[in-house]
Image (cartoon, rainbow, N blue to C red; front, side, top):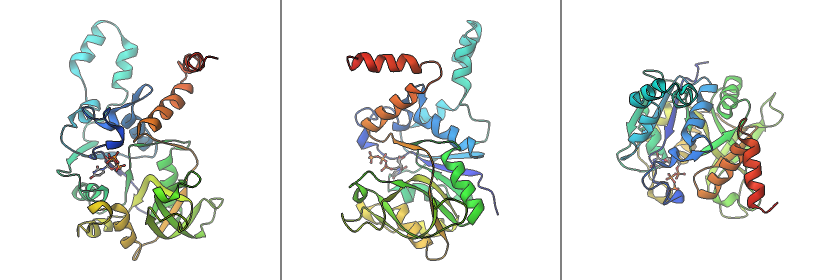
Length: 294
Ligand code: UTP
């Protein structure tokens, strides 16, 4: 079975749910405690064995590229002032030469269009998609769990998780068939998926949560530029068509997801990552308690 070496990270959306915080700073560079959201997601990808990260970017997002590159002036200042700790922190997330690519989407035509923009860089191999506003705190890393499932059953894998009670109609929901062996019922064959089903018609309560292992045949389908919901080229529509010729499995991965695409989700992630931070966890707890008057 061919390995999954490359991941596509689409970041070219407008981030309207995170406005105005994301107006002048790319949404995915907003902070989750000590680092930008994207740095946490790239760390997850590295832990899953990803060798090459392909960012689908829009105008005004050059700061993403800068974050993963050297800042020579800053680094030499820190060296000269013997601030080794800080130097270690600002260089910890750097890319290795040739392991990151940045592709302009040109127009935010939808997630399916964003993924399609990676077609030449992916070529003819299976690949991962990571939606970077979904921060997944999991051991093993959420994408690693997906890739392990891919090595067990092949085909395409989609990470899913239970929608909050009564909220399934707000998400992309999967329809499920038989469980695969060896995953305690958490890996199941998929029979369909539906974007925002009307309440009461949901085929399950599991929503598509932002990590995928896909096969390159998806690019031919997305290349037809079929427009779906919101007049956008939807990845879900492309996957539904691919499902006609290839197997799909849904993996209920083990871990916690933080939707950092809106300001409350981002706050929740900040609190959670702050509370479990090795150095500052206790201070975060003290701050939270004093704010609550405890
Ligand atoms: P979302 O729709 O959740 O993100 O797309 P958004 O558009 O940034 O946010 P809202 O809904 O306006 O608040 C999921 C991911 O796909 C990317 C987004 O940047 C986000 O990371 N995306 C979406 C693109 O790269 N291009 C697109 O045309 C659409």
